[in-house]
Length: 194
Image 1 (spheres, rainbow, N blue to C red):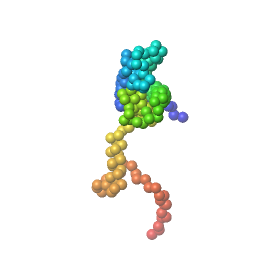
Image 2: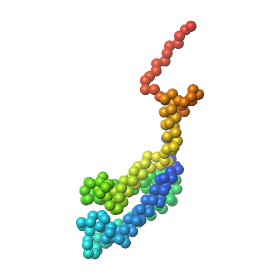
Image 3: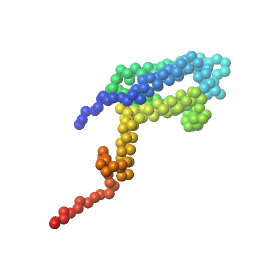
Image 4: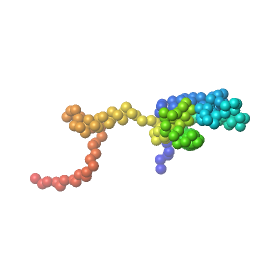
């Protein structure tokens, strides 16, 4: 049995998203929850937002939420940086964050199912709570499928080459890089004696 691959080159788009973009936006969420709690509550669900001061219990919960957002940002940015190219650590962190994405999406269920799909009705916090979480979850799923990323330009060039060959090519000396597969079986012909 071959040993498991523990090191791989993590693609640059994943590094950008997980080490910079997502932690930055998590810190914005922490800032709003801690320093702009009235705006945070009004954007989350205006009808239940307090109009005159924030109850102590709500203030405590918002401070805890800000702390969790900050932890999320620091944990993601620092642990993944420290892991370097250790794919096992990256996968463990990304799976944990994917589970957190599911919990985050579940947390807004009280707003009704419409919040999950009615993009035109989203405000700034809905874009963070739903839209950005969708993007994060999709990025995590793509990472788990292929952490080294996809060679889009190379894949497209190979696809064009195969298509050109199947259509007859542009020249007689042109050969495909991979053999053409046929869906029907070809029986070996019997040798003919001359």
